[in-house]
Length: 233
Image (cartoon, rainbow, N blue to C red; front, side, top):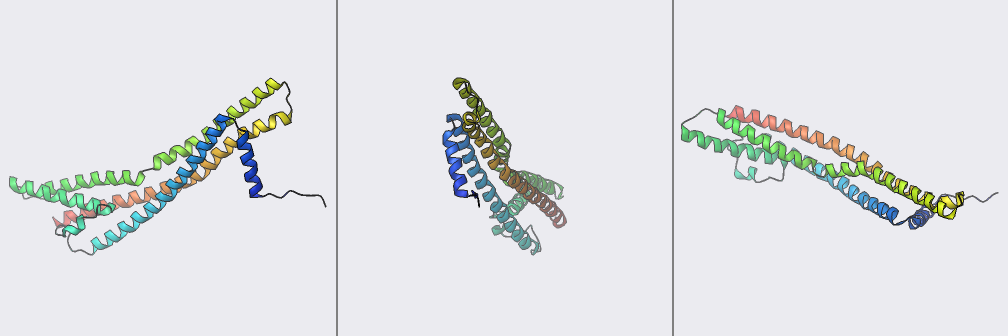
């Protein structure tokens, strides 16, 4: 029975290290940079996933507690000291804007609730925009990694192939044995770029879907809160 060489992760890792060492300085810099980007991308994806999960749980708990209250306008100060919760941030801005407008309207002798509600709705919109930016934080940087990693890998490959053919021209011999080390080293950067980009694009799309869902829930909460304030005015 002929000897067979079975695939081994250790052997593959060793081969990749050997290929990396054969790269020129530019190839090694690009490959190392892509490795750093991979670590950053995974850190962002894992951290963002748990952050969004935690914010959703906090929002649901706050909304459930708020729905148990008979009135919003006379709630104690403790309800407005939870800015870390997105729903609580919207609630706090709306209530504070409502009472500021109420104080000004009282000085002017205006007892209609229209101005108070308009100020509360404007505050809700500002808080909504602020929390939307919070939800989307780090997503732009992750999208940049998704887009840029394949191009960096391609740059390294083109550079490596150019260097390989330059070496062939100097040696004046164009054999597979001469070209193989340079070409394999050049292709390593393409592999590195794809290893960074492929998980990142799946992670980005997953997080983007979660972010859009949370933003929609935030908008629905703001609308329901505005309706409730209008009914209580």
